[in-house]
Length: 322
Ligand code: PMP
Image 1 (tube, rainbow, N blue to C red):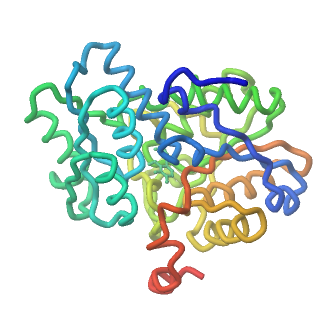
Image 2: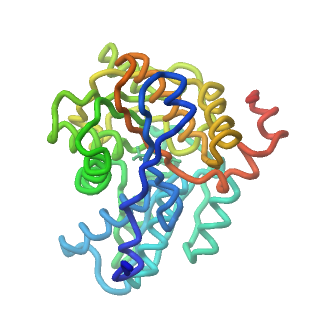
Image 3: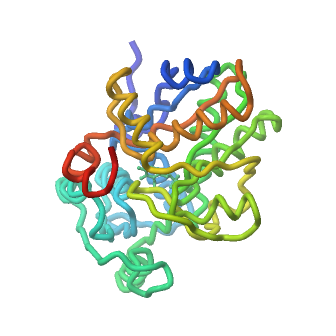
């Protein structure tokens, strides 16, 4: 029997599962990293731990200190758990448009929650800028800065990418996922390219994000909109800078939701919408590369976080999702 030395060691080393439906639909083997199996039930536990350990190593965080972050929710949940385990406090700034479950969870974990109206990045009231200001005004406070702190993507180079490579026995033809901060796509992309530069790295972009056009035509331009939480980026963050993107797909919420539904009904996985969008992207990548290929993607978080949104028929009807 294995034991785990402490609770923080529960982060990472997630299972990789073969998805039957997407594999049968394409004649490829499509595998997915079960990031909902992390203690905070999302991929962001990895970035949270990476950022906190990097700050400690650089002398930026001291005993009794406070970690401040602007987040769509999952990073805040990861930071709150890591902070509790290490004796820090957390202040989380979040747009009020995020799911109620994330807010309730953050409060339950002991984070101080600051809700702000949704505002464009250029506005000083955007949640990221608000979190930086709060950190600057506090003594002994660290601004985690997940978007531009590359300790985020490093966690995916040394963790997620290495694990995927090992779990697939070095036999992998392509990887894809969507970007919020870009830490996952850039970190896994860089990590896998270092193993074998022939591995195709594809960005899966939701509607309303600007990265598809950036990688396709060199111009940051957004089209349409998405209700997916945690993904959809309008700029090249420090984490995205230098990401080795070979090709890109634009995926609608409806296409992502169809996979959320199928994975729940046919394979017993309850996931958030960004996971469905990633799986839709993996199917596109399989079609792009052709049958017989081995492809990996990310199941970013648990669907239990979206019972009042994605899993509520009235909410879906209001958002035009069926
Ligand atoms: N899906 C969800 C649900 C998320 O919370 C996030 C993080 N913002 C992502 C995907 C994207 O991850 P990353 O920040 O590494 O790009």
